[in-house]
Image (cartoon, rainbow, N blue to C red; front, side, top):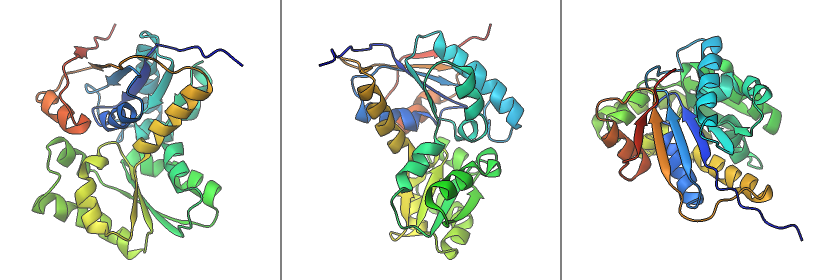
Length: 268
């Protein structure tokens, strides 16, 4: 029997801003023994409106920062990076990198959905990556995609209930409901904060797919299969390229608990 070797190095997670903390929340639920280094590029957010070349450049720099902390696996929690840059990053760096597109696709495998909605940033939707990967996996499924730019500021302001977010959600999602979607993939890390209002608009008959929950399971399986699990109590250390005003209250909303270990990541 092979001896199990534990790996105490942390998991690295990066995002263009703070939305990736919803992914961190799911990882901590499933892997409480794992420590996490989170990097949010808050000085240059958003990535979703930038060119593919710029997204690749920024993501490369984000990964290089995480590597200075000896991480054992990296999660690109940014859907814009995952849909525009992941193949470049995987080929360039000698470390496992998990994006957010494959978890979304994995979540609908084996389902009989004939029509799926995808919502995300401009960069994610325009890349067509979700549509491509879903059709490769599911065949003749119909994909209906839509950008929802106002969901991000609503989530960060904590406006996840009430008349205003409901009206915005109706504007974005009603056309998808009319298309007869059976499932809706939340293609942005901010969107789980608005789960309740999204569910109210699309109805109980439409399944909501949260890739962040799936990626946590994928990491758990990968670490176990490769004998890379940690022991003890996991910790969370947050690095930001700029510390926005009111960050601690927003982070608490995204993580579900207060944060204290916050650092400014100064560029060289």
